[in-house]
Length: 383
Ligand code: SF4
Image 1 (cartoon, rainbow, N blue to C red):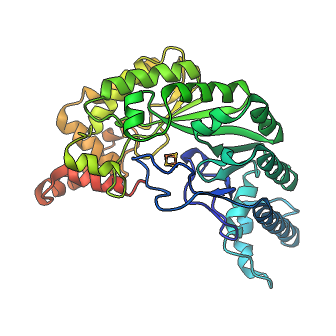
Image 2: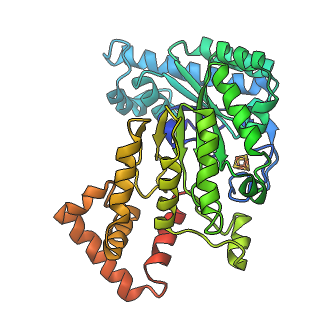
């Protein structure tokens, strides 16, 4: 939920789409992962506590004006989405971002996501101070989450993590990407599997929620098996609340692109990535949280559910896709990447099917790179 009258960072996890975003630091203190281009060329900077508090004050004042508007326009103080149409007809104009803040309030003003990549790099007391200030300004807030690097989490003491939880921090989103040391070193993740596991366990022991992001495809064809098995092993040891699947997509702006161009790394296609996911999921035998495929890069977003109950149906779904004839898999991939399909069964809708078949004919007859190149271009806009 971007509110443009305060400073905002570039990204948030897909699961925080409806959360209010509050920028606490700028960019990433590591900035070397070869599959990541978000903060390239930008230096990490903690924001001053006063700056962040000024943004919280701006939001609180704006929220108070929105509540006044509700009273003036006969909504009795209730924040309803319909109130948004009154924002433009007041003597004192509202900033653009008021609309998004209003929608957040209408949804209960419950969730906040702190940007950017590694807020636990701040001194714990400073982050505790900001969290308390935020909770005081918005007492309805129930969940505050942030990204954090495992290397940073590993340096925090259990007492520091407990202090953050008590001040209101609820959940950490962290990028594991792989549990395979060879891959972690190759993509310059800056941590070993041991550090990832210890950091994840420490977060859970402190009573904080934990989302671990994994990146199918990151080992390329050569390391697909090691990637799947060692990532499953690390996840079993941590047993996070969420595993979030975010398949590799290499853009020319990423350092990894050079390895692919030179032939040093051979990428898996959609089907290879799903076969790898199948192997990983098949070995998640101690995971009791939720698996989510909530990034648009996932070909099968239905690969989700609470484990262990969801493991069998999820594997069956992947098997159903992989058992389709090649032409049918190509048809589904195109339908999914062009936004016509979300679920595997959407192929059975005759109207959607005809649309996708028409695009497929056009691509096959006109695009010199064929379907794979077309699909690759489609997914470039997803990140
Ligand atoms: S730690 Fe995260 S934000 Fe920083 S470079 Fe790696 S993937 Fe990108």
